[in-house]
Image (cartoon, rainbow, N blue to C red; front, side, top):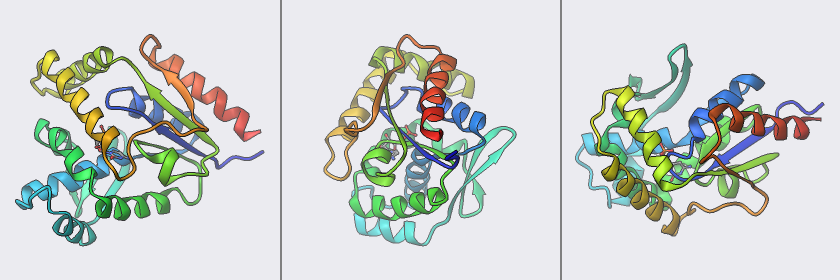
Length: 224
Ligand code: C5P
């Protein structure tokens, strides 16, 4: 039995990737790696240091001197930037609306992709993001492209934000998500696109549990 497979989950914002990836990872005893959190941490630090988000060289220099760690905990995955817990800060509206600008830089991506590949080197991982199946883990045994209508994705983010105590308007969220999808899909460096060998999963009408079960079934077939 092949146990330590790599599972790659890509898709646009709010498709349910992280929630579902966490459940799948837990059920299999795998490590969950949220690559979006890494792009968010870089964006947060650049904003703190007043680095212009179009300045690719400065951003790459800053990132090369930074440590980003993802640590599992009883309250979910925690994100540490230079040993400081920034789990909450990286979810702010300011970071969310700027992260695609930072993620568009090829040099930023190169550095983060190398870290992501190291984290996944021994397998037994569920990694989610935008370019996992197409760039980061091209040989992943299971590749999923998850999506849902933009209305449904905005609704989910709205509820998510409410739980986090972040104020938002549904209409604005829909606009922000559509704009982020556009930037992520149209950028030159590793755009968001479904890999040829990825399974498409539309979560619009699926419960979280049904989506997780569908992936677990596919994973079990790959692990035989
Ligand atoms: O997954 P999340 O919504 O937290 O990702 C935040 C942003 O990080 C995305 O909108 C995208 O710009 C960037 N990202 C990326 N490649 C990844 C993961 C995230 O470009 N693998």
